[in-house]
Length: 188
Image 1 (cartoon, rainbow, N blue to C red):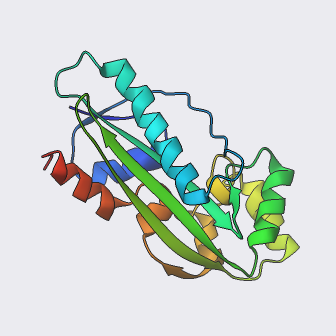
Image 2 (image 1 turned 135 degrees about the vertical axis):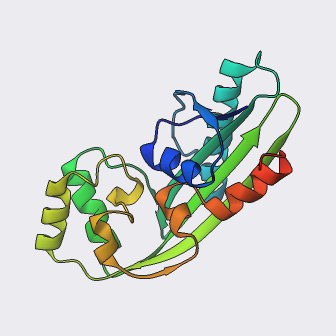
């Protein structure tokens, strides 16, 4: 049985696209970058910790496999997680405006006897955003709970001049990499 260690409706919707049955686990893992920790390592570590925390909840379930994932926006080695509030969201969007950034998504599948992981790195270029663009977007509320204060699958799609990589990875669960991991665990 597959379990998703996430309450994210985006991750559930993306996993639904693969047609796999799964359960959902609520986990509480701190998302704090260690001093000097490279962004790729940080994202992978957090995803692994989420999967591990989920596995502890279902360790008694035979053949349990837990999926942990994390996605972060990175600009110039600065990791842009979820904004604290509207002011933080406006700051993030101003800094991303007219620039190219990376979106890193890590996925881990863990069981009692095995671990596999994959990393997806996408490049996104934002158009130059006016203060009015940013204010309207933040007022929509869509920025809350999103890495980098934006949702590619929502209104922020209009900000994206170019995407190189995984659209679903920018949303929060890279489906190509996820499908490969599921095959390794013999989910079809």
